[in-house]
Length: 349
Image (cartoon, rainbow, N blue to C red; front, side):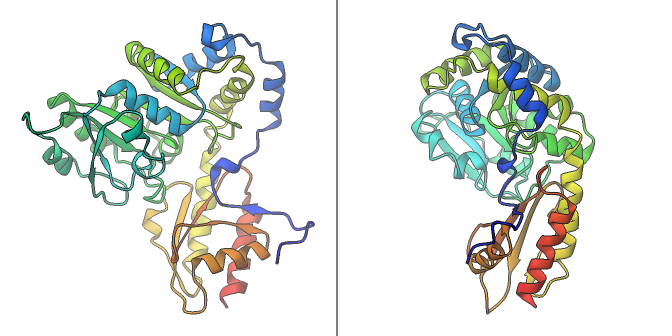
């Protein structure tokens, strides 16, 4: 059974489903453009400079996606046969189609985190001593906020200690900040201070910030030069890309502060879920706009509950047979959250 065409859909599958705002559409229509591969697109150049300035880095690079941003960063930081250290539940390790092995030919040294947050002591212990038998460790990757951790935020002190350890051992740090702005809004910590703990930082324009496409890579000028070559190798050299970069500028300039509303809606959703029979949720892990909960029922599993929700016009994403993820964003308002809780209460009564 599918919802009636008259039923308004509440789409909680991801914050990637957001539609561009009217202001973004106007900016895209009016964007000044040029050939970006020839470094002649003024709107792309403006976006790259804006991203770098916001994060306190020397330069920026506009890429098609967060995955491409992470992969060109790995390619720029490493040599074939190197080893990188990262969380076993990280996006780079799980959701980028083995790009680290295929594109950079590096070995992954995965560590078990606590809800996405690596223990600096374990990071230090994982770094190999120089030995002809060992791969060379060159990079530590962290993810903030952490997707599979449930939108958890890295404590600044933890990032600083990982950075200190990396520097002490001659390693670089890459921050996968797909939802970095959610972390900054949630904690009140300036983005520059978070970004200072990494040599390179990526963030998505097309998630909570609402742009239709694109992500940013930031770092030193030399690093961005290498990343730009890697982007070209991967077919990511776009031409009159100012049309989409214009939406990214609007996203950065006007959409960051409103992420607070998404966090409030996620908290309302999580607290409502906690009251429902057969639902298990750790409210302490709901820190930003991601809500992950378990279905502990004999009569319905997570995939079954997803199907039942769809009948009510609610879209969500099941991680496995027991676990469901819901993500709040600008296109889901408080009435949409209330509709979701009402539908769940009806199904689970």
